Each structure stands twice: as C-alpha cells, then as structure tokens.
Image (cartoon, rainbow, N blue to C red):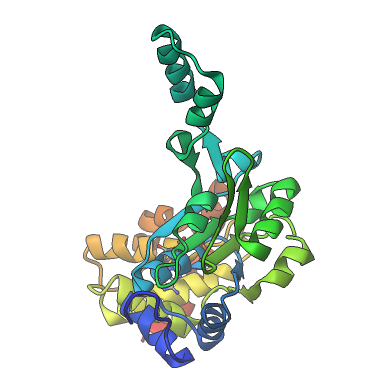
Length: 305
Ligand SMILES: Nc1ncnc2c1ncn2[C@@H]1O[C@H](COP(=O)(O)OP(=O)(O)O)[C@@H](O)[C@H]1O
Ligand SMILES: [Mg+2]
C-alpha cells in the first residue's frame, strides 16, 4: 500500500490495521474502508479509552502520510485552529522599515501580509498539504469539547475544504484530507455535521477483541493471565462505577502485572495493582470490598482457565 493508495477491501483494511497493532471488528473496518473509498470524514463516537484517537494515528502510519492533529477544547477559536498572522514578526518588519527611513506603505503592507508572515494552524496545514497522492490524515480530536460556533465553522470547511484568507486569497485542497473526528459524547454533535460524515459508535471491546488487543500490545504476558485480566476488566465494566476502565487501563494493568512477573490473578495482586485500572477513590473502594472482589475474581478465573 504505497502513498495515497487505499486498501482495496474491508479485509485489507482489517489486515493493514492489524499489521500496525490495531484490532478492528468488521463493522469498524467497514466504516473506515468506506470513509477512505468515498473520501468522507470518519466520525467516531464512544466512551473514553475505546480506541478512537488511535484509529487516526494508525491510519496515518498505514497510509504513510503525516498526521495533523487538532485537539479541541472549550474556547478553541478559529485563529488557533486555522491560521494566525505572526504579529511579532510583522511589528519587527515595520520597525526595521521605519529605521531604514524608506517606508512605502503599500509595499510594506503587501510584505507583512505575505505567506512568510502567516502561521498555519492544523486546519490550514491540512488543506495546504492535501495534494493528490499525499493527503494527510487530519484528526479533529474530542470535538464535543469545542463550542457550537466552532462546529459551525468546521461544517463549512468539511463541505469544500477551502479556506479564505482575506489578505491572500483562497486556499483549496486538491483532494480532501483523510478526516477523523472523535467525540466522547459529553454533548451531542449537530446532525448537520454528522450528516457529512460516516459514523461509527465504538463500543467497549468484546472479550475476544480485548484479548486480541492485549496479545498484540503486551505480547510478553502469559496467555492464561491475559485471559484473566480481560475477563476481570469486562466484569468490572458491568459494575456500577463512576469511571469504567478503557482499553488503555487494561493495557496499563497488563503491563503492571507483567512487570511484577505475575502469572495468575489473586486477591492480593488485584488489591496491589488496582491503581493501574481505576483512577477514582469511590471506584477503588467499591472493588476493594471483599464480596465484590471475590465475585470479579471468580469470573476472571473461570474464563482464564
Ligand atoms: N482496537 C484497538 N487495538 C489496539 N489498541 C487499542 C485499541 N483500542 C484501544 N487501544 C489502545 O488503547 C489506548 C486508548 O485508546 P485511544 O484511541 O486513546 O482511546 P479514545 O481516543 O477512544 O479515548 C491506546 O493506547 C490504544 O493503543
Ligand atoms: Mg481520544
């Protein structure tokens, strides 16, 4: 799969992702395949830690193109996301021109509003770099954190991939970049934006999927322990937790157990290492309760056998 060539089938997508240690079920692989084929943005929604951001990173590696990332947050404005003029440099240029005593106002203005003084932020970078055969992956991460004004701007950008800079003119992408938008769903994203995209809800992984992830990412872990770890985490997610563990936590825990050279889960080991898995005191307390822990361990051992 050389530059700019997208995989030819859903299976090829699944294999290429796996080759980069990303495990995708058929539904996700299908949506990714279609997003690439139809050149439509991919919209991934789901709980934190289920592997949404990782899709963009892996796609960039798989397609051998740059990854351009825009992390969203409350108050993110168009300047930070698209472009800014380099005011400090512009001022300096004006001072220097004044000092040299020859100020041609129009020439100076043209000079300081030229591309040399422009700072391209992620969205402009993505548009500039989207040429046939070399379209980057543009990750718009955690869009639910930005405000609706920004979302409206984004909707416009996603429809034509052009950015107009009053002083310079319009910059157009030759081809659409590979866009991945993620949301942890702390608020709903507008239908209009979703309509532009191909949508996939990323679930917490099934037992088999999570086991496959652990095997790929923590290859040193004994098979039986890997099964127990995954079964434990899966059972834990069914408890009434404030913040259920994501895949990242499963992997952290697996690595911790590997570092401790454990080969089986027991009550003491669970208690000692729970901090890799749960990050809230109430959750830790719940799982430290003997009857809860015994129940979880029993489930884990049954599946790990
Ligand atoms: N399907 C998967 N295959 C391989 N690794 C995964 C998978 N899902 C999640 N991970 C790992 O779990 C961690 C969290 O994933 P991330 O993409 O940051 O989650 P999200 O963006 O949904 O919060 C990453 O380190 C990633 O490598
Ligand atoms: Mg993320």
